[in-house]
Image 1 (spheres, protein in one colour):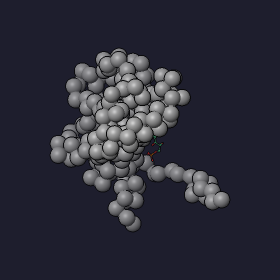
Image 2: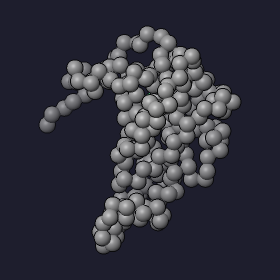
Image 3: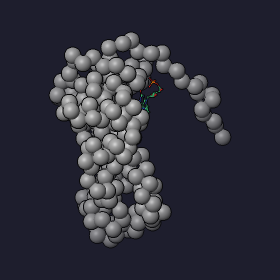
Length: 206
Ligand SMILES: Cc1cc2nc3c(=O)[nH]c(=O)nc-3n(C[C@H](O)[C@H](O)[C@H](O)COP(=O)(O)O)c2cc1C
């Protein structure tokens, strides 16, 4: 079996973490590096990661995350937030992100035009914009979880939270929002059986 598939079967949504085990900092930093190097639509990298280590903050968050134990028991807790204002088509950040590729100005202008057209129906609605930036976070999240599994580090992706409450607790800047949360650490219980639909019920060839 390939190393990747081994990691896919090692990974499960870990519900209870061993509170006595901490992820070595070098390994945790490499997980963050995997997030950083993940791809994003138009290369906009809208993710802004918050690593919550403060115990009081973790406790406050737990109450707004369906009281899930992972929030306080995991070795590391990463909140995938997004900066939604910065990716608006009139933001100077967007041009900078295209310019860094070293393209001639005319080509940057072309990219800006394509981007503006693409984003127009999205950026007119705050929720659509938040969903678009959140989608990019899920790519980083998936990469981080599978990569962590290669290091035998367990994870739990978490969508079970009150978004407004979590954003208030984290005191996010205006225009920023929470996309998803991920807990990282080491399992204390045996992994539950992996249940998946068979390929034939999810793949269609035409
Ligand atoms: C985006 C996302 C959000 C999730 N949110 C939660 C959550 O809030 N709490 C939880 O215990 N599991 C959560 N899960 C875990 C799923 O329930 C789990 O991945 C699914 O049941 C398959 O089980 P497995 O990952 O153990 O194979 C989430 C999974 C994903 C992908």
